[in-house]
Amino acid sequence: MAHVLIMPRQGNTVESCIIQEWKVREGDAVTADTTLCVVETDKATFEVPAGADGQVLKILSSGGDDVPVLQPIAVIGAAGEDWRAAVPAGDTPAAKAGGAAASDTAALAAPDTAEAAGTGAPVAAAPMTAGSPASAGAGVSPRARNLAVREGLDPAEIAGSGPGGRVIERDVRTALAGRPPLTAAARSATARSAPAASPAGAADTAGTGIGGRITVSDLDRSRGSAAGVFPGRPEGSGEEKVTETPVKGVRKLIADRMLASLTESAQFTLNAGAPAARLQELRKRFKAGENPAPGGLDLGLGRITVNDLILYAVSRVLPAYPYMNAHKTGDTLKTYERIHLGMAVDTPRGLMVPVIRNADLLSLRRISLEAKRLAAACQDGSVKPGELSGSTFTVSNLGSFGITGFTPVLNAPEVAILGVCGIELKPAEETGGGFAFVPHIGFSLTINHQVVDGAPAARFLSALCGAVADIDLLLAAN
Image 1 (cartoon, rainbow, N blue to C red):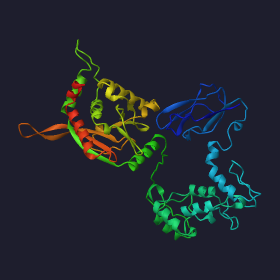
Image 2: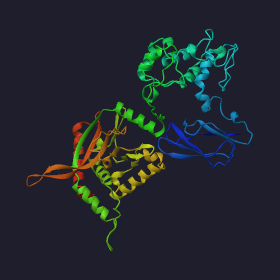
Image 3: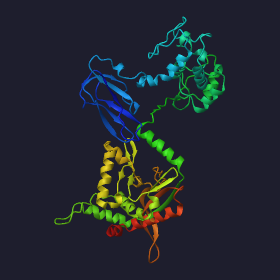
Image 4: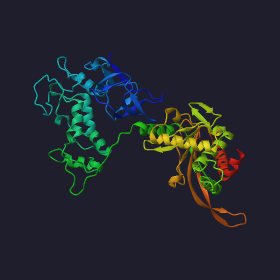
């Protein structure tokens, strides 16, 4: 019996995967260990093996498709075997995608007429010239009429492909494909107007808005024209290339989580700065120790960065302020003993937040090594799903870009996130009087004001600034 390969679930929170590429083609012979395709989740990239020996009978999804987990993506079996017998009816991506159009047609078909199943080819109940506008008696389906009205099309000018020449939703969408998009204002105007007064659109016309979009002015001009189509673009206005990119995969996950974070919590940001002279000096000494003199002691600290030192300071200060190392889930606040530091990492696939677990028990060197390992894994796509969850406090560092202040968004369900800003010179009063410019590093702390008040958060931030200002003493005490 044929083997149906389903999209595997890569972690409990993964709902869909994007097929990056297929490594095989239909008809190829494979073994159980052969990699059929490479898929991308909201967390990492994985190879999907065939799972059975045989021939690739059918590939059910294309490269770039965002496929829900546990949905069939391919069928493996013996040469000549019917792959359809192994896949439940309506369970293929094509069947799911075509469900809306099929239901539209089925609802409108007379008892003795129906649209050819799965092919999209109409079976006419009455003679009609192909491609001609719908006749008065053919009618328009309710869904087609509603879509036409919303888009400012006259259904009478659309060729119907349904039973007896009836205009169905697919016909309206075909007409829309040959017409430039409308601006929001133009779309609203067409929805309020009578279809007969709205332009039908044509493939060889264009609007004057951004990206060729049809504006309200274009509608007014077209309604006054006898032809009832959009006038051409004004001479010399030029063309503008507009690229549309689907928001999916990691980008969609980021978008959904950021919106949910802002809508489900009361976010409040505090800003402060700490003297960074000792921080810079310590970093310089570590770097100098990377190539010690003959006979010198190599502590392996040469690759310690300023960000590593900040992560270390956070891991040592947080235990004294447990209300900052917590999750808010519904009406429950969970406070954690161990410090699991989330670390924002910029990758080609979008923002990722790997977790340095038990950071409060790790040395500075161990924190540095783990931070670099996780960042590299995020960059090359080899990070594991378990390494991207479970943080109790997050640090986001934009200081290397020269950012002097920003508002980090909570990594829900955490109740706090620390933004690390750049180092800049600020005036400071000297002991003997007068002023001098000294380096300061900025911090932006966002809290969930539902469970953390401003004063307690300020006390934590003040303590962190003090620890960073005396980072050498903090290292000596631990």
